[in-house]
Length: 94
Image: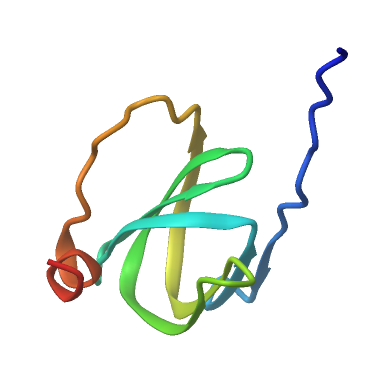
């Protein structure tokens, strides 16, 4: 049997470096004022900046929106399992 790889859609939209919408989010690791770390269908994203605040999180649709001044965005492969959430979101789900 042939195995099919289904590529889910991931989008990252930024308006004036202040409003961010990310789709394809599968896991939020942390949301803090200086840094947002999350896992998407295409890998781990680390976003750093100032005054970052979550606005909308739809876990069913995989959408995260937040505001603040974005200074840096970094993608990396995500292969680590068992990583626990930290920061505000991690404390919510303990």
